[in-house]
Length: 116
Image 1 (tube, rainbow, N blue to C red):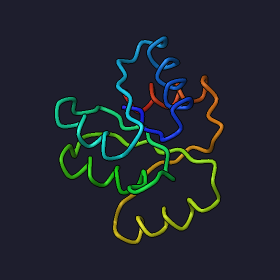
Image 2: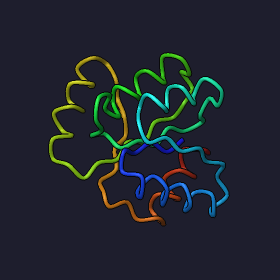
Image 3: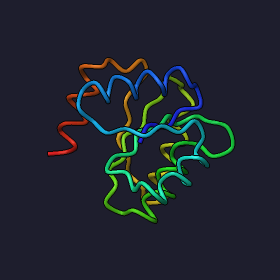
Image 4: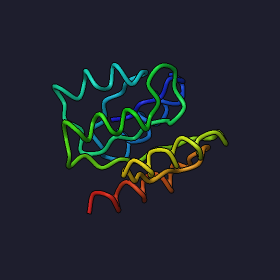
C-alpha cells in the first residue's frame, strides 16, 4: 500500500511498483488508507510522513494495531520528520524511513529485502 497526499508522487510510486511485480493499492490520505486496509491487509505499508490530519507515523501505528505483521516503510523529504519519529520511538514504535526523493532502484531493492 502506497500512501501520499501528493497524488503525483503516490501515483508514480504505484506505477513503478506495479511495473516491478508488486501488487499495489494507493491512498491519498491516512484515513483512506485505514479504510482500504480493512479489505486489503497490506504486506507492506509505504507512507509519506508529513500529511494533513493524520501523519504517516500515526497511520503506521494504526495499521500495525490491526495488522501486526504489516511491514512499514516511511519516507519524507522534510526536516520536521525527525521530531515526529523521535516521539514515536519514545512510545515504543520503531519504523524505517527513507529520504525523498526515493530512487526507484533503491526502493525496489529495499522492498525486496523486506519481503525476504
